[in-house]
Image 1 (cartoon, one colour):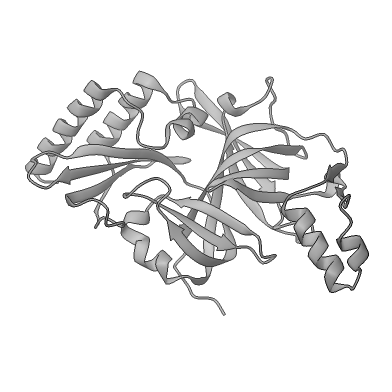
Image 2 (cartoon, rainbow, N blue to C red):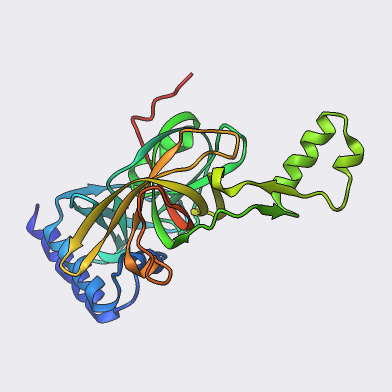
Length: 301
């Protein structure tokens, strides 16, 4: 690593310490890990100083002109700490633009990529896709800057998905009666296709689910999703002294008619309700931040 780059990093670290602001767009994600304030600034400082990977990339969205963009990563077994630094033209030092955790363990899903979005601004990307059932998923692509063109290629791909719990609680297995929303729209379409038009046009149409069998993963706000699933396995994880949590393997389906899809879900105490500790076999519900990494960008038939 060049002396010039080390000098740039030192300048960026000084700016980081003086601003004491949250990294662009990811404050709630760091907080879900239990990292905020001075503790978070110290971690990002360490990431810049001790990074084990460094990648230059071109700005993926053309709103802003930058002379240089670089992503630094500090690896650990469970979570990779990542920061994006940028040097505006006619300036000498790199400045902190964003920082976010990358979840190390993923599970492969086959998905039809339909587009990319700049929900977090000009340095990052969110991918949109359709599950086999037709309803959408969206996820944050942690290395979007250097992989943007491959994601834009689209098509049917294998994607490694993982989630970070933003809120989580045990799910009581009671029937859910749904009166509006996309599931009602889907049910009306099914009834019309079957020729049951009177039922399809019933203003009081409802859909009832037996929740002990229900597994769902639905986007609620771009890469934040509502999840109902069953815990298949639990492993304790430790990111740092006093920063411990769990990595769950959670079974969720594309919808109630599909089976066999699981994701690793990272859970830490700030996201848990009323001291709940997840256990194998539990039904859980909550809001998660979904991440997706490409698994070779293979176009699948």
